[in-house]
Image (tube, rainbow, N blue to C red; front, side, top):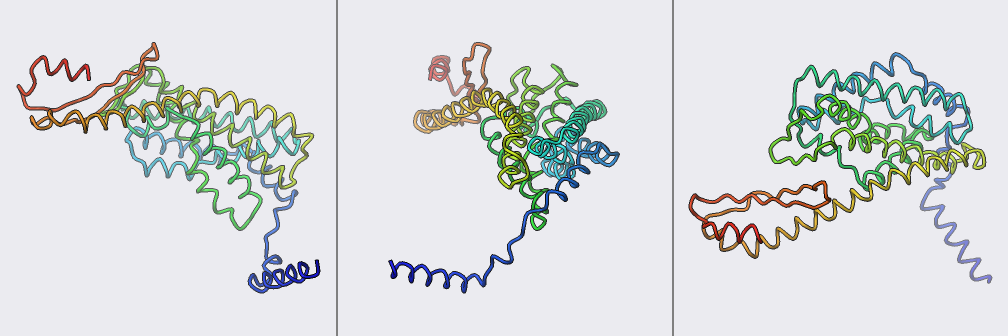
Length: 331
């Protein structure tokens, strides 16, 4: 026992020497008073909030319509929509009813403003072609839910530490808030008058609904995990926060259901693409020798949940007989 105590003391002294007694340099969490003041200010539906949100929406909508990734990222950075969301989460665990009401109204009005400006911007632009940046925001899956949860944890923790507050713009980039709402506005305005771009497969009716599901996924995930981080750091009471956590957990479960189906579809499509690629390499050798080339594999899901696979093959005129075409279709 004495040998164990000596060994423990030795390693303890060694650790202090190596770390130069780093524990005294550890940053303490922001006080409850300061954090409460921060969120009181963040929840206010001020002119600055709506002005920056409007500019962010215009930039995001133009970036989506023009398929410009850099422009969309810029819109994410300046969007202030994360403030009322994190405030909403804090108000849930801190049992601050007025703060909860104000942040919810600010968030709700911000969502409505974003969709409205996206509709107006789409009308002014006159673009009817949907390209990859829009498509990327209409098919959410469980991966997006995990990203939203991680972003919520990162954002809430950054609010409680001054030294890492500069991480908030990175959090805004990692999780999609304004871009999917902009896609909702684009989808509501275009309706059925939308044309998929070259190489894009667009399932009818899922433009604005898919984007809205992505936003709700991020919203619920951020609120739930941010609330947990606040509670774990002692900024709220577990008993008083039980109802809010339960409601957010139920919402998290509800949004995960369609995301799970979407994730299964994503896995299925990946398997089909891999299967087609393997077979193309193995079975199309005789076609390639005739000067043919496999250009693309397109998939879409029908109303009966059947997965339709389309293969585009380029070949010189007269390379295939009608029998060979039928054999290729059967393959």
